Length: 100
Image 1 (cartoon, helix red, strand yellow):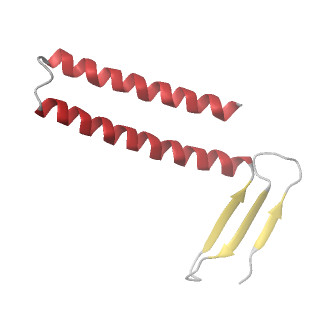
Image 2: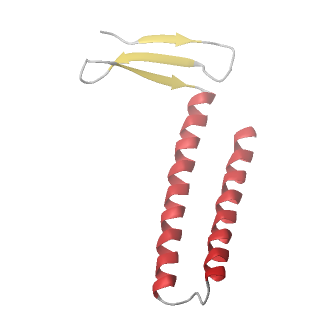
């Protein structure tokens, strides 16, 4: 089986689609080139970034709880809310990059 190219010259979201056999020859692999591919890659990168940020925050929160740094439930909730704000700001920044 050979690969097939489908190209467009309009400069839209998808400039080229390549359909090729997978390494195991049991299914086809679809590769998208163009703006859509960039958007999908950016989404995956942000998901990885936010997962790492969440994991670091979770570890830091657990460390602070173990160290007794919070004297009340409201302090714990305030810490968690600050993290939500950091994550929301990062997401807003990422969204701004997508429209530029």
